[in-house]
Length: 278
Image (cartoon, rainbow, N blue to C red; front, side):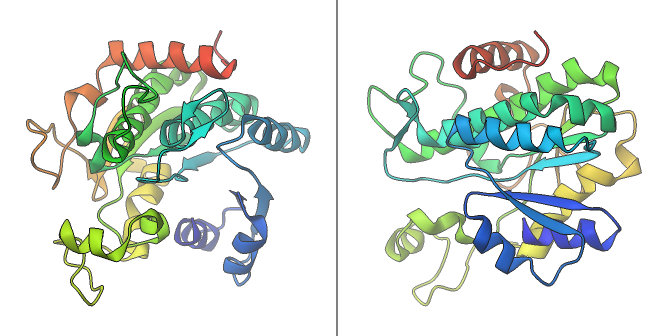
């Protein structure tokens, strides 16, 4: 979030950065003006509610919100009533947050940006085994969560556009960040992400600043005026992908299907007990 915050604050925005460890975020952002940090753990719906209530009490509107927090390929972990942690953190936490903040978002008539990934190609929504009770696969779990991030934006846009709020999803690009914290060096070498010296070997790998560009573009660009519910990459609207084999670009139909997006919204509302549009 540091590069997003720097770009937006530099353009004159006042930026609120919720963080699971706010003291760490505060240290990382201390040289940026017009930025404040708040405590928020997306894996804990009580924390989500507390943050949202605190923010709404301030009476401020939200002009844009970027959902870019997440985890990738952790060891099998359960949250809440037994939810798989990647889906719970990357999707359900953001779902509850946006629904609880809806009064402020509606007041701002702005944009909601959902950071997904080309990793959505690793799995559709596993309707028959959402929480991997039949056996955990960390990459399928990540893929399902990233698919959910896109479907969330698709249906939120349908629900919110009459209020003047539009939603977008995106792939930021291949970036080496602490998101890889759950992977050991040998694994990253084996799958071709880095060489034996730890240097990135992913084609067209981006710097964190470059990786923040599409998020900021989706949140602010006049090129997207009057649009919503689309998946973006490289500061443009992505094309359709036709295969799960190629991770270089595009979006698969299973991540943008309106029927699946509506189904996921209903399921997420049931699981979290939150739905601003009920």
